[in-house]
Structures are given as C-alpha cells and as structure tokens.
Picture 1 (tube, helix red, strand yellow):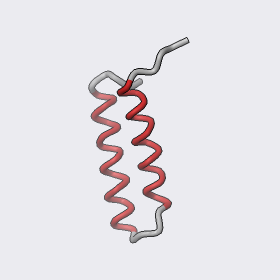
Picture 2 (cartoon, one colour):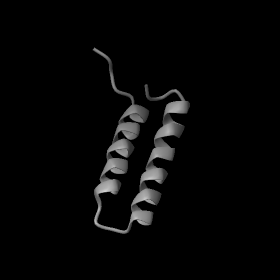
Picture 3 (cartoon, helix red, strand yellow):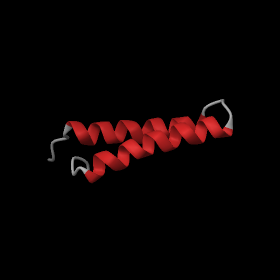
Length: 52
C-alpha cells in the first residue's frame, strides 16, 4: 500500500476545487480564472515531484 504524502493530498484537493470552480454559479470568466489558478497549483505540486 502506498502512503499519501501531503503534496499528493494538496494536488488532489486543488484538482477537485478546479472542477468545482467550473460548475459554480458565476460568470464564465470568473469560473475559468478560478479553474486555471487551481490547475496552476496542481501543476506546480506535480512538477515538484510530490504528487504522481
């Protein structure tokens, strides 16, 4: 069994927040900005090698 590290948990959480941002009841530009902000964080965490 693999242990989850904090970076993997954060990346998973930000991925979920990004998807939630797309379904929010706000304007398209706000939803897209929130999605992109969360996905940038996910990409940064994955590039650091903490999340696979």
